[in-house]
Image (cartoon, rainbow, N blue to C red; front, top):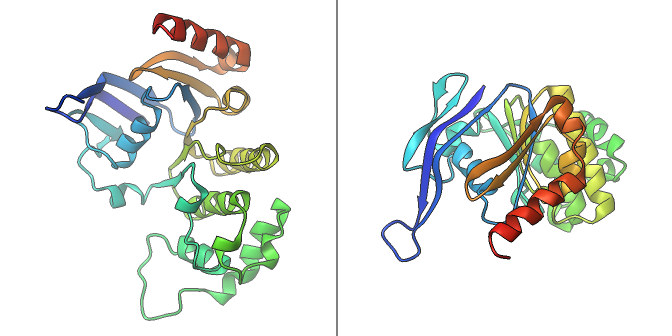
Length: 257
């Protein structure tokens, strides 16, 4: 289980721009859950992911995984158990390296690099078999620099790389936001398949309300650093996009927008 316990987070403390985002924030997520998270800009969605991954520190509170307190654990150590895909396709891959080199690098996550070649020729066919079902032709482009690929191809590759080695958590930070609708659907279908096959505990932040409703088994809505909606099970299955839009509109009116 993943637990956020009494988390407090202040941005720009001691300045005129000081902002208290989280105050006594609590959230528990069961193992193997696929949680979708929605909310307006500034609601705390990405900050929550950054706190989990160790990208930003907290003023107080604890983050526990399986009962282990990781609040002060270094970011690189946390990533031994996590994979993350960002909104920007350029962040999850190295553009000057080939597809083969990128996949080989991801395949060696957590392993020691000795004085050997970074690419493993014995794995080439395995990489081709992994890429072929995507229908993007990547299996025939292993020698091409990743920087030459389209945004959708790069994001698909980033998702595969993030989940190649055994991980417990998959962190998706608006990973389809920069893609065209057709490619976004391909990436979402691949995401769902990987999450289910590997039984990953997944946190997916998205602005796509349809994706939030159609995918996952739990839905959260955030506002001003708090959970204002939490639906799972049958409640989640019965939730419609219009239901979320209604809540967004109510929040907007309360905020004077």
